Amino acid sequence: MLLARGVELIAPLSGASCEIGCGSGLITLTLSTHGEKVVATDLSYRAVATTWAKARRRGVDWKVDVVCCDRLEALREGELFKLIAFNPPYLPLEEEDIRWSGGAEGIEVPLSFLESALKRLAADGIVLFLLSSLSNWRKALQRARSLGLVVSILRAEGVGLYEDLLLVLAARRPAPKAKL
Image (cartoon, rainbow, N blue to C red; front, side):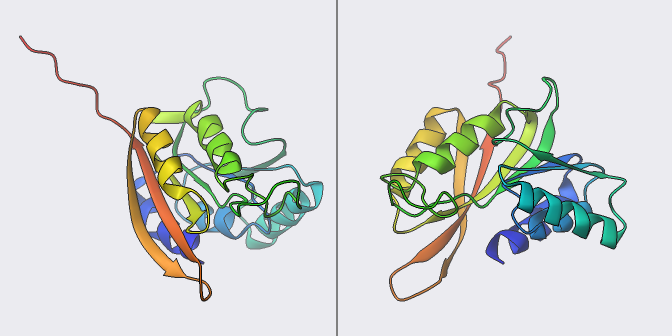
């Protein structure tokens, strides 16, 4: 729900949008209420079928494309999105179920999603995603900054005794102004 609330705040500013790892389709459907075009991807055929069925039932299938693929790697070059959202596996677990294992530090999968997103992010685009406080989230933010992004934590929300979910916004740095 945290990511959905973040999308509700950001999406009205966007054009074409995308969700990586669409799962049940909640974020894709939220994006569809605002965006002119929405692309959703997931490795799971079941997730893709569920998201597509929900888009059809809601009557937004005319502007939602759902693709079974890894991250955004199957999308044609030149496809640019103003908003890319994802709720990746982010727990610091190795060799566990891919639905929640984010790698040894919990950031390997989120960073791979981010790097894939940057290949399709418009110059003035925004990436919105979740990280866990149990992961090495500071390192993930540092890596995002090294990729040329301005990064902010919009909100932290407790989900148990020892974990917060962090809603992260990442945007490309503005190009430096030329001196005349």
